[in-house]
Length: 217
Image (cartoon, rainbow, N blue to C red; front, top):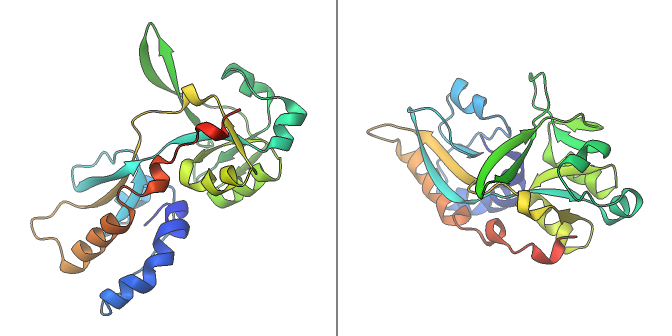
């Protein structure tokens, strides 16, 4: 089970290489942003953002994962660029809505008080809710409002001038992209092969640490 942006951007394009290297392995892929699925369905391997709080799984970091507040230049020109987190309440928001959850996934932001950093969540009403990051990305590009997007999802649109990011001081710090797999004394060879392949192709990927300073407004 893999979060959809990672699957579309990095895993699916290299599957021909994986199957050429391991022609006898059968791979079943489910794309989901929900970490609960990894635990309840007992997948062999999963990619998620943040730590998985389950001692039955091993979590290996692949690289940093920044969550950026983004909007199209047209939207910002029409509605203004939020100068503070409080200003988000007056804007149209696009949010991730996981299946079966009563509330949309909140915006995760970093704040500072008395010199100390802390993580906060902003649970705000959204104009457009969807369980797929690609749809949120397209809605953001089309000027529907503001979305919080993982850097790899937004990077191409930022580079092409379709999106801008803002409030960089509130980007959560310390978040990681992890690959998870069951904690076993003897990991099956097929699982070990897939984990090592993912670490080889995604670990430390340049997109995860790309400089976005030039896209900030």
